[in-house]
Length: 278
Ligand SMILES: O=C(O)CCC(=O)C(=O)O
Ligand SMILES: [Fe+2]
Picture 1: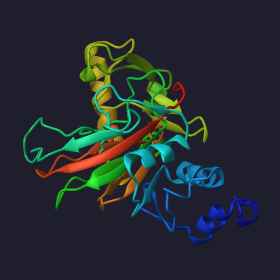
Picture 2 (picture 1 turned 120 degrees about the vertical axis):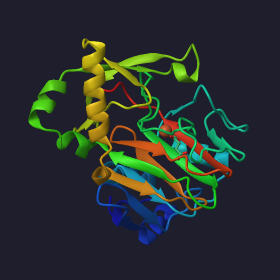
Picture 3 (picture 1 turned 180 degrees about the horizontal axis):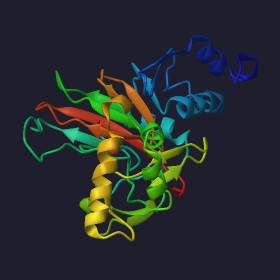
């Protein structure tokens, strides 16, 4: 959108001051000059939507938002989902992530919420297209979040593998969050419903099996895909500052909450419902 198309006073102010710079080679843009508690009219969100589509991840530093304000901002992007395992005390539509002095450091097999590479809630029949994560309290060191671009991951597979996985589907389970949480089957390669770009869509946290393959074949293929999907060349690692709000497109990227700290780290999160992956 152009300046001339901006309609409200708020929009004109925010577009004039918007400063967009790349976050890494693989993905991401840092957006400065916007106050998301105030500047979230329809025109602003439309503009941010096109930036998110282009960069897959947006970093907004210095956002002072209560959980309720975060929810209001999140609602501008679409219908919000709740999560079976966590919620903020003030609203079901913001997740409270973290807590006091969780000791993750150097403890094998112990992960914070979101540890391990994943796209959010892929066990859901309509998993979130977008997640927003807001840093409320941070350890003095550590606690970064890593992201990996799954369009590049797909596009850099060899032709034989692309052919092998073209029509495959995988089983994703949400049972880690409770016996009644749903399971789903989704394509191994999904096509982004806005950009039409293909992306790998399997992850170590929730994808359990490739439909129609033996356990051995499925495991071999999944491990090969997981290893490829998270090559450092495809990644951006976000080192958090307090009040950063990071948004990402779950149709395009996976992420990993790195459990390398033993101090309090608190995040607030919203997730925007997506369509059925296809
Ligand atoms: O805490 C983090 O860095 C990310 C946690 C996570 O996986 C999520 O919020 O979806
Ligand atoms: Fe996550």
